[in-house]
Image 1 (tube, rainbow over the protein chains, first blue to last red):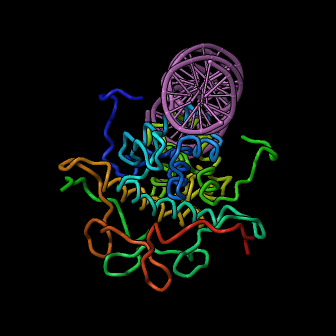
Image 2 (cartoon, rainbow over the protein chains, first blue to last red):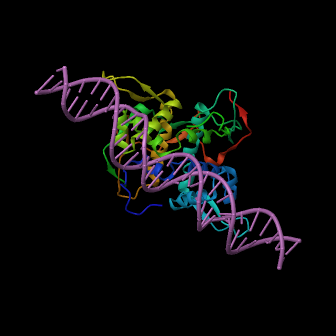
Image 3 (cartoon, helix red, strand yellow):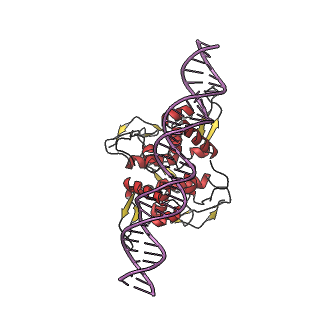
Length: 151
Length: 151
DNA sequence: AGCGGTGGTAGTAAATTGAAACCACCGTGA
DNA sequence: TCACGGTGGTTTCAATTTACTACCACCGCT
């Protein structure tokens, strides 16, 4: 998909992430993976995406370390795609997309599919981001810093 | 961009969000907007995107209620694009993209641009999502529910 | 051996993107 | 006042990507 030299190598973590999964299908694949989808055909029917595109996306996601292509699971010698540790850390991203959509992409009275919180049994409440000490973070309390080296 | 009838109207909030801003440029535009970018040319130079594409994306984002096209701000009778309330609520999304990128899209020792937490003066720590009562949420503690109506 | 389901690839048409040219308007300075 | 550079676009056209439709190989079953 790209040669090894064609990257300006952005330095902005947002851009890096967007480069890997900043497209419609990749995000929906991740969503489905969290919902338990593992098999090629399952993704394909579920998303209605062309098979070659799905094939390409899965390969990209595997290459990016988000998915892992495992040889089996239910006996049949077929392949299946499961989230890696890095992939499972995208849960926050999917939840964020979901919560914004719930708040801003529906009309009142419209039907939607909620995510149920296993603890309460109710649709997941509006979540907030907090620091390790429990204090919430607000947009206007942050700003870009000087470039640093990754530890 | 689309006729009013071409929508299967997904019901999945993730898909709804992805439909609006599930593409590279839209996400980077939002990121820049949070960094204080307001003007067309500023976005254009900053992102290196073609002007017609930028124009189209800005129009889509304005149409989706994420950005607002205001007539002025610094005196000059030029236009500028600012985040709406709905747009400002995408802060969590940008932060999530950023944090995943920081954790998984850099080699050790590589340079990156951190987001500074105004409270601590240090790079923003790894954030966690918590319920209104302060308890954290985990991926395997949730599952899809039956369709419901928006209140 | 035949048959249906799964997991793809190949070929081609349609849509999207990207680069460059063009253009109107604003503000400044001579 | 009127030329000139900067801003904020639109238009045009080529190149890339996506989507759709075959097609194919393999597996498991009868």
